Length: 86
Figure: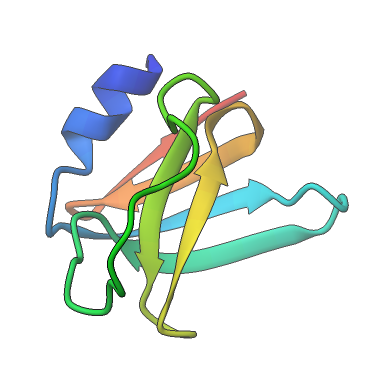
């Protein structure tokens, strides 16, 4: 699955879970959602997430915006199906 196919699969507003390795090497599981704009405080990202292959999401548990690195993504669960990346 490519980066763009994944973005289409987890379309705006769809809640999904993701497991990935963080930059510091630890593993994280996150319940998140794309396309949330309620808590934005203005401004735009200072980088292009598509160029860096990052998936910008809203973390449902910690109630904040995060970016998931596509290259370190291990699995996602969306629509009751788990998709693994190896």
